[in-house]
Structures are given as C-alpha cells and as structure tokens.
Image (cartoon, rainbow, N blue to C red; front, side, top):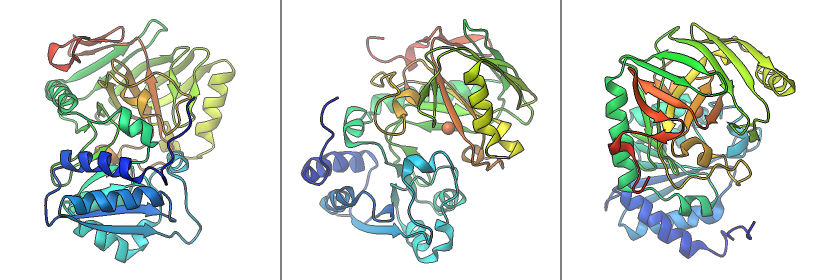
Amino acid sequence: MSTPFDEAAGIDAMTRLFRAHLELCRVSPGETVAILTEGGQFAARVRAYEAAVRALGAEPRHVDFRPPGGATEPAARLGNVGRSGLGADRGAMATLKASDLVIDMMLLLFSQEQLEIQQAGARIVLVVEPFETLARLFPTEDLRRRVEAAERRLARAGTLRFTNAAGTDVTYDIADQPILTEYGYADQPGRWDHWPGGFLATTARPRGVNGRVVLAAGDLLYPLMRVVGEPIGITIRDGMIVDIAGGAEAGALREYIERYDDPRAYAISHIGWGLNERCEWDATLPGIGMDGRAYYGNVLFSTGPDTELGGTNDTACHLDIPMRNCTLTLDGEPIVAAGRVMPADMRAFGR
Ligand code: FE2
C-alpha cells in the first residue's frame, strides 16, 4: 500500500477537491456552510473546507462538538449508530439547522439530530473517508443520472426479489416505500447524501420480507470489516431474522447481534444495489467501506435500523452486507443478473 495522504501538508489539494465538491452541491455566494466535527478531529480538513467555502463567496461555520464522555471516531460510531449526544448542544444544533449545507464529519447517520437538520431545510453530506478515497470516487453527474434512473424504476416496483448461487431466495414487498439515493452530493434543500456513494436503497413494508439470504464466501460484512469465508444462512420471516445457520462465522455473527441485547436488531433494514463502477471489492481498503457498499452490480443487504428511510426502528446495531454475483429482479424484471447491471439507463459507460 502506498503512503497515506498527509492531510496537514496537503491542505491546498484538499481545498481544490472540496471546492469542486461544494460546486456540485451548488454552494452559492451568501450561503452558510457548517463544518461539523467532534472533539477536534479532522483539523486540516476543516481548514481546507473553510478556504473552499470562502472561495465560493459563502460563509463557513465550524461546529466542533465536545461530548462530555470524549469523542468517538466516525468508524467506531458505525458500530453504534445514531447516538452521539449532539442534540443536547442547543447552540450547535441551532447553527446546523440555520445552515444551507452541513458537511458532517462526525457521522450523524441514523440519528434524530440528522433528521432535524434535514427537516430544517439544510442539505447534508457525510464526509469521513480517507482523502484518497474521496478523490478516487469523486461524484459525477453521470453517476447521479444512473442512480436516479434506478430510483424511478424502484419507485414503480411492488416486489423486489434477489437470489444467488449459494441459495439466497428472498422477497421484499416494497410498494410505495421510501427510497434513499446516494450519489455523493446534495444540491436540494433537506437532501442527505454521502461522499463517496453510488447506490440506492429502499425498505419493505411492515413484515414484508420473507425467505432466506445465504452469504457466500467473498461477500463483505460491515461494519465488521470482514470478508465472509464460508456460507452463512439467514432465515427471514415477516421482516425479522429468525435463524442464522452455518459454521463458526455464523456463530460469530449471531454473537455480534446478541451483544446489542435488542430484539429490533434482528429486523431487516434497507435493500438495494450498487452502481459506482469505480468502487473496488476490497475489505482491506482504509475507511468505512463505501467501496463495497456502492460497488457496481452488488446487492446491498442490511439489517437493523430504518429511521433513515422513514421508519421507527432506531436500534444501534446496523449491518451493511454487500453481496456479489446476485440476481435482483423488480416485479420479475432483471435489474442485476449474476452481478451484471442490466437496464441500459443504469449501466456505466463501457459496462
Ligand atoms: Fe446501511
């Protein structure tokens, strides 16, 4: 692996990239951009963002949240989503809600605070990946176009089914359910996105997932940052995991979920597929694993909370499980066939 990017020495390079990203977010003169950090983390990025925001004639506002119990790294927060204590800091919340855009470097995913900021009309982009990853997976308007084509197709569908050679066969009743798109930037009031991105997701109606998901060797388990080595069979009834079967790895997964001591941790969460052709299938890459989540032609299966998609389950146990070589259909029409994206309007150039 090459030497990691030196952020303290690379502020000019970061400023250039952040400015290009703020332009995609359509930051305009006179707007305010809040830069949210926790416990003084990402100090060099904050300086770069401040310079990039000013270069566009907008006003930066750094909000550094200091939790009484000490700061959490974004990667650690992914193992315990939605609980930061930020809501108790009224000054910070007021600044964030009054901003036009919030750059979230503390990871408010699945939190009440994030929903409140969105409802106040601010757009939010989560930015916590290593600089190299942000640069390599810099969002494009083409990616947005293809994700939005997928969104239109998903919005029309009533049933999502996916299968794989390992024995998966599971059906989601998705009629009229909310859809979350992630293409890496936010230019509309109240929109949340994540840089880098490149996928979309929906959830099933209550009790609307049934069947069996069999994780195959090579599939990825986030936030555990683990590669599946042997089949793990997950039986789902009425939207809940009722059994996890297999060898030692199935046992480890069972124990991981049990540790949360929360029956809602067994709920099935979002489902969708990846469309970012620049993502790599490599669990050893530094960062929180957006490469796997947005990988072109994956199926992203997940468990736990659904507050990001309008639900009420706010369990802290969230698993994102990118799976390869799956076939996913919407009302019987193949969207992904053995890992290949089928509809022309979702396909990346040359794929
Ligand atoms: Fe997720």
